[in-house]
Length: 58
Image (cartoon, rainbow, N blue to C red; front, side):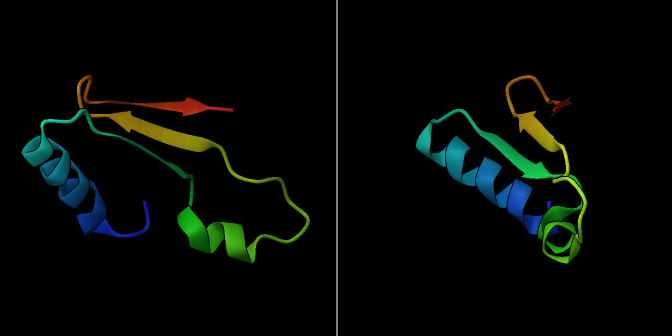
């Protein structure tokens, strides 16, 4: 995740609206994706607030 406040902000908004919160991002964030040269895109990291666990997808 690129900004440390994003996760807490998203969770707070979802909680206020009574919604489930889930997010995902690329390992290394947007900077890694923008700076990569002739390499594959990074794996996705996901987090679901209901389970409070991280998991990687290919």
